[in-house]
Length: 375
Image (cartoon, rainbow, N blue to C red; front, top):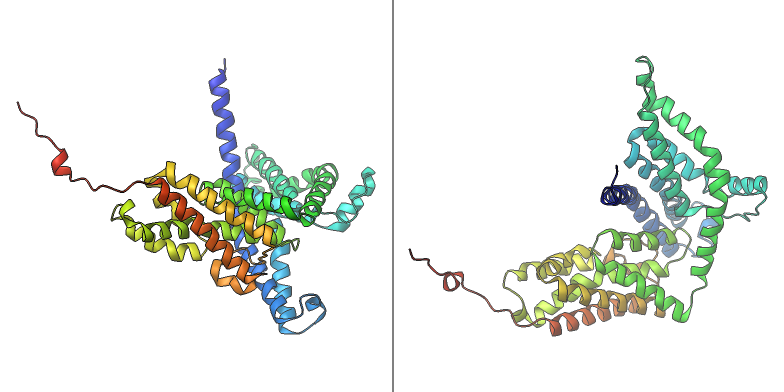
């Protein structure tokens, strides 16, 4: 008989596995996002932002085309590599094809017409890619367990499994799931585009806090992916909030060390020096040595600092079309002074809080605290 503890353990194990599969998809997607965002932003800088795609043959047009391709393909890449993480190579092609299919307005419109729902040009976005990738991965993995004749086995991973998985899931993904997910994605995109004032500040506050709470872990990645996928929809405010909030923790902690070194052990100096270029490069993991040494004081401080920076960025309307690069893509930011000001604000808030919370560090000499035992 299966006990409740065993059931809970199985559920936790499965959820952990799903999280790892999603993170695999995200890790493969990020370079495509980076290339797409940076090249598109360069195209806008070189050409006319409003008409660059009409300036055929110009340098700006070529940059914009490459950037657009990167942002177009990143979502199918997400679905494909989620399936790959689950089923290895047999799941890659079905995950990619199915995720790509539901990004096509013509397919979604036709499917919507067939089921009696007006899609109005909506596509399934990253939500659809995640669902398609998970389904393709699980079905492909199930097919891998089939017992087949020996002469069929060499064809299973390259022919049988990919084709059967795609054929089996295409109707489900396109007609049953694709249309409603596309409508949900369209609603979320429209809501984000319309965010102004307090709503935008609240979104920045939440995204900023998420970027700092685990410094590169799953929560951080959720916020980052949220910002990056919106770049493909030409919504650049959340990406700016995410990037600024991700830069803040290492910079704020380094600042705290330099203004109050007496509150840290001497060995933290190396971490503080390294945190500066890591922070400017949008590598939030630079804060980890500080958090590992004193999590109860450091983590709340960096969460507040990053949340403040993210909220300020959204409130000021700062934008960033590049999904990575930190200070090195500063020139691409909309409102450069606002971008820098929000980083400074978050770093100062972080530094002030953690410095106030920490007491002076007292070096202990182990030789004085070790007592000799007598027999």
